[in-house]
Length: 362
Image (cartoon, rainbow, N blue to C red; front, side, top):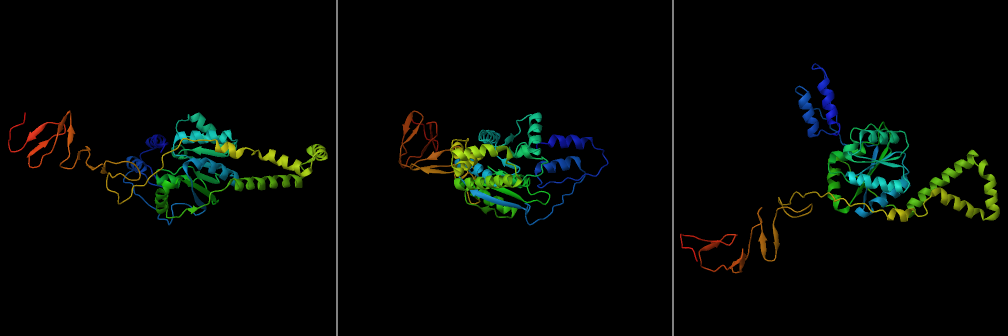
């Protein structure tokens, strides 16, 4: 809802007598609040669909460790060679780091997040629309409301926190009757969150095998073969025939062609350079299990729940604990012992108090 203020400004300037209709892929509380503020007795109409996502969008996921995500992204970019691709990160830091790493490796990429000025934002979007860059790395908030056509691939580098965001992300592709491909990276500890997404959108994502370096290299070779074959068929070789003859006279023809293709591919040390990239790790998203007790310590963090260990039982919000009856307690600077049969209690700060109006001990 990065454009919420613009919507409110426009609606406040509209005439009082009007017909207003609002459309949204998901109906969040912020949108409901706008409807209640600017519409009279608004009625909600829901379209019941079998799936929240477009069938033309092929959805796949890769189970990949956090530290292997960037290598996977580069291999998939090399294999699929997308015309226009969007890469979604969960944080602004993630967007900046992924963008910088891609640029250093020669990919045509730019980043988009909420800290950019409007001028910089417009410049990035114009480059993306005009095909000057082929990869747009963005956060969910920055990408909301963007009018972009021609996106062929969506990469969920990080799973979104909100399931609504997943629907909005992959909806950037597969528009106007065209097919699209959405590829999601899932850290092993986030599989439960993925299942929740699948349950909500009522569609299973296809688990896909991680591509190897050879897969990436083979795809590049196929692309190069096609480019060279097209150039030969078109006769676009006259400017270099003399140079080609000189090279063939001095060196083996196969070696010459292989060297030229190697230079064209430009990936002699590509895998090594990719391996040297280290991104700041993002914390995985955990799903709280339904049968977990409130505040229990389990997957997804630490609560205020029970802790068992060292013969202690810790419970409650203030963390008070009790030891076995006949063991010593240290409170404050004094050492007290529980003695069987004595009707006395001790407070946490070490002070004594007696029941039944007994006198205090000196």
